[in-house]
Image (cartoon, rainbow, N blue to C red; front, side, top):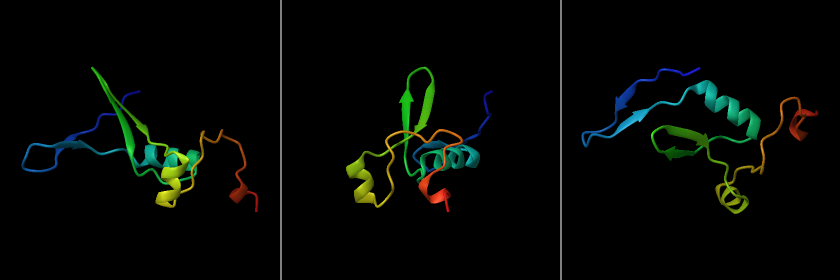
Length: 82
């Protein structure tokens, strides 16, 4: 189901932005195990936004934990076992 979001003015040059829902960010941060700092956009007739999953070297340089695939729901992560 689509979520209606307002397009807001960012600066005097005419740039615009759409604010991502907090629940969307929290969902992917919980699933991936690290903070979403960047998103990937596919621009065609539709705009598709997905979380950016950094490659191992990029994550190491940034100091974030990197998993190559999302954690399935119901899976216990190492940090959740204690």
